[in-house]
Image 1 (cartoon, rainbow, N blue to C red):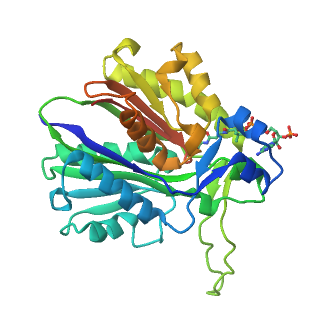
Image 2 (tube, rainbow, N blue to C red; image 1 turned 90 degrees about the vertical axis):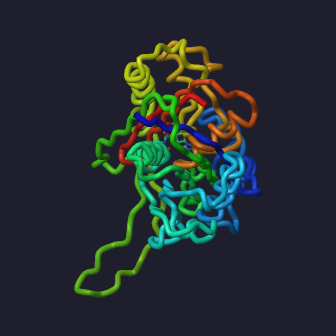
Image 3 (cartoon, helix red, strand yellow; image 1 turned 120 degrees about the vertical axis):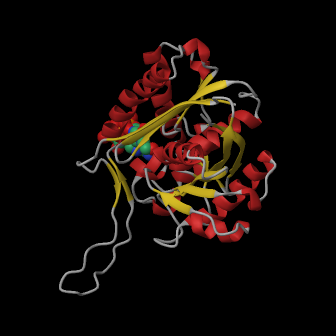
Length: 322
Ligand code: UT7
C-alpha cells in the first residue's frame, strides 16, 4: 500500500505588523488585556495583498523547499474562508499564476480546521494512485472581515498563508488523520453570506463581518483539543512519549495551555507562535508547522501532532513524521 509524506513546507506573512498599541487607537482595549487573555502581542495585517497573493508566495516557498517546480504539481487544494472572489477560487488563480498545466485545483471551506481537511483530502487523492504531487495551502485575510468597532473580535486576527508540498512515500509518514464537523446551529462563530433576493429586487448588501461568541467557542475549543490529541494517539497506536511536539491551531494561548494541563504534558511540548501571528484561521496550522521547522523545533525524523478546531463547528488533526 502506498503512503504519503510532506516533501516541503513554506509560509508567507504580510510585512505590515500591527501591535496591541495600534489596536488601542482603534477600540477600547489595552495591551495588558490582549496579552493576558490571548497571548497576542502583534499580528501581520495585509494592506494591499489579497489571499491569493499570500497563498502564491507561501506556495513558492514550499515548492523551493521541496525542490519541485510547477510542472511537477498534479493537484492544488486551498483551504480558506476569505477567498479573493466568490469564484474563481484561490486555487484556480494559483494554477494559472504558478504556471501549472491544467490540473485539478479547488478551494475548501472548513474554517480554522480547513488545512487539516485539505491534508486529509490530498492524502487520500495521492493514495488513490492518480496523483503524485500535491500542493495544499491554508491562506487567509481575515482582517478584511473584522469589525473594527467590536473589541471582542478585531484584536484577535492576523493574515498569512502556509503551504505543504505532499507526495507519495514507501514509508508510513502520515500515521493518522481525523476530521469532524458538528454543526453550530447557534451561530457562535460565523460570517453572514449574501442575502436572498425578495421579489427579485437586488438586496442592499450590508458588508459582512466576522461574529463570535468568544466564551462558547472557548468552551468548545478547550474540550475538543485534548480529545483530538487522545484520539490521534489511539488511532496511530502511539503514546504521548512517541510525540516530539504538539502544534495546535493558534486561536488563544490560554486554549493551548489548558490543553497541556488536561493532557498532563509539559507546556514546552505545545508549540505556540500566536504572540506574533494572531489567529490566522486556516493558515494557522501550516504557518506554525513551517515556523517550528525553520526555527529548529521540528527536525527530520521528528513526529508531531497537529490539531485544529473552528467555525462549523469543525475539528481535526494528524500525526505526522517528517
Ligand atoms: O479560531 C476559531 C476559534 N476561536 C477561538 O477559539 C476563540 C475562543 N475564545 C477566546 O479565545 C476568548 O473567549 C476571547 C479571547 C475571545 C475572549 O476572552 P474571554 O476571557 O472569554 O473574555 P470575555 O468574552 O469573557 O470578556 C471579558 C471582559 C468583558 O468585559 P465585562 O463584561 O467583564 O466588563 C469584555 O467586554 O473583557 C471585555 N473585553 C475586552 N476588554 C478589553 C472583550 N474584548 C476586549 C478587548 N479589550 N479587546
